[in-house]
Image 1 (tube, rainbow, N blue to C red):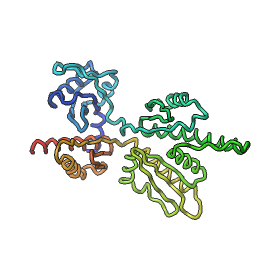
Image 2 (image 1 turned 90 degrees about the vertical axis):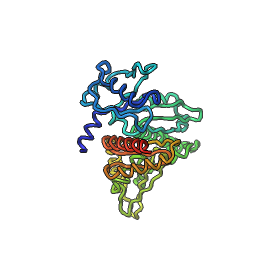
Image 3 (image 1 turned 135 degrees about the vertical axis):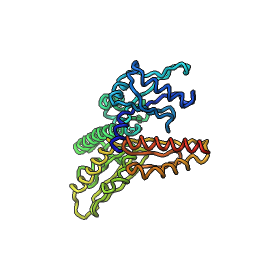
Image 4 (image 1 turned 45 degrees about the horizontal axis):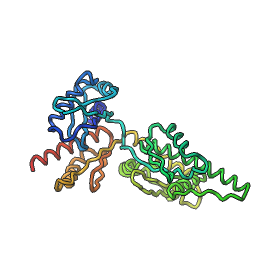
Length: 346
């Protein structure tokens, strides 16, 4: 069963940009099937089209052969065209197993570098170094938003911390020589805290691991042993939206930097493994439909025993489903079918 699901997810692509509400769902499903079977679109035999889904304007197309997925992805542009549509609609086609988590957004405070660098030049350097990230405009206060995958943002963070640390050490050396210039202070509390943690890493008293929050929750639920330590080590965490910072400290009377470092490496290694295999789908509630949230929660609870490796997190406006691609795909599909069945019977 699991092998079959994994094979199916490998034969599936995600389609975004479908015009929502223009045609009946069955008609749109037919148009999508025709589009992805046509040779001019690099298509092939379609096994199934899943539409509508939990996300508006998104469909899943599963081909009979995995090779067709590669062919479809190579096409530069997909245009959804049909006589039943008033115009063509550009589609975004991505591999289902790709983009494990939705992109996260982080706001960087670059003002600490303004005395040493031209910030615009430094931003250009970062863009060349981190081509997988999308940078917003540089604000007058030195802040800039960055969007991309969590691992890519983590690498950028580590690079900036090293750069900030080298500047701090340079200031200390110059201050010890001249005793005239005060040491520069990092101006944003968030980066100040991270810098202090980064510097303390060297003496082994404290280690810091920055994790994607969804990965952290999954680890805590399914791999709690990752965070089990003896009385000489204390683990704490702070969650801020998409990011959770885990602090590992030595609490024993005898300092054992190696022990703290081993715990950090264990958490990091587990998080990397999970980030490479997990996927998240988000199920939104329609506020205008009475008791919809309750219905979704009931359906999810009834299906959960059949998907023991899926983590379901309930929020006021949506439900997050996290797990391996094949199980998340099958789970959300079953939820969609059951919800539609409930609406037909009420």
